[in-house]
Length: 337
Length: 165
Image 1 (tube, rainbow over the protein chains, first blue to last red):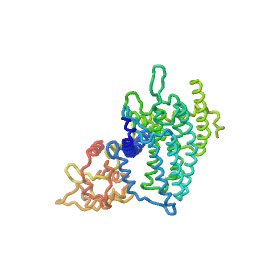
Image 2 (image 1 turned 135 degrees about the horizontal axis):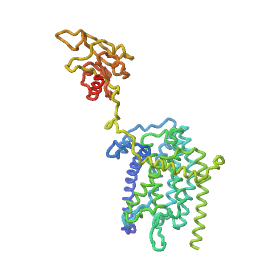
Image 3 (image 1 turned 45 degrees about the horizontal axis):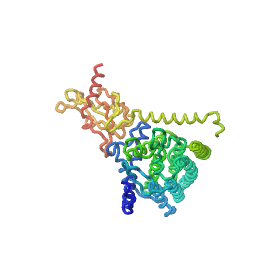
Image 4 (image 1 turned 180 degrees about the horizontal axis):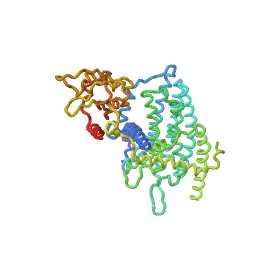
């Protein structure tokens, strides 16, 4: 079935269909991630969460979406009108672009992808860091002190954590020898009797810890949600945004969470391989579990103070990531001789 | 800042984080405390002070004798009683007089229950209903007709018990 990619017309047909499908699946998944987050946070606080609209509250997001779509889209005076509109658009574009290179095993031998880049991970980092422009420009264009402060914090935070995020994955690339996501997922080992794919977290546990902390910071989620910081900055860069522009930022944030979870699944948990579970289901399960980890962290830890955030990024995670790269390199040289 | 914490080990810090995560996961699987309000209601005590009722004797006569002691006792003045004489042709209550008009303004009432304490014939009691919202101010002035609605059985049982003592 994967041969269809070799046929030029078949390739284009499948790519266009896949793009439409990914858009649909991601938008739906975002809605249900928000639902899942609210329910899980509710359970952590011994509440049921939304459970009124539809069975188990599953239609809550449809209701919220309708409400937000019909809200007045208020634009404050003296804003930079063009940048004010472009910024949230950028957030959505950056969030969705990453999915161009994420491959998913659909059925036993059939894997889907839109673009098969041999620098796939690099591409994902490149487009997800565009998100910083969305937040900084949004904060700047809003003509509001709180928005500007949120945007500036965000810029500093995302630049700091991007480095440890990138470095946390270097050991993985060193072990696999490729940046192509399919190669990383398909990495197989020949350990005595065992011959097959392994979750790479076994080989790079420290890398995973650095990755998950940095990814939470990178997607501006609690406990690193300083750009929003409701209690101090009203809503940070989101303060002056309402209606559908607010939805776009929100969408960008939650797609970012799903992207980070999907990337962790591909890089550390063996992608769509899970015993005899069908690949789509295995991928889905792993992503849901990682999204739960995100929510779990949000439900547990209070927000870091700004200097603590910077100290953690520069003095703990970055040196740890560099040491992790060096140690992994030494071990690879020793094992391979 | 880091120097102040030198006595704490990194492992201790990580252990603290793990403890926090364990706590929240434990709460996740604990029973919820939320009451699904319109379907489930919290139990009320038997002496709960909700909306008022005017009682009747078993033979159908009204208990209220129009003495206005409830109106006098009311700290916010929300009770209006206008009494009239009973006649042999038209006997409403066993006493000399009865309440021709008996109105309670529920927007003013603070549900203190002083009217119930003041009543010499136990004519007015406070029942268990507390969902008294309505759509117009006029509807909050409860007239005699509304107040004379039959008591809920559990309130009747409580009153019967206290009267036997």
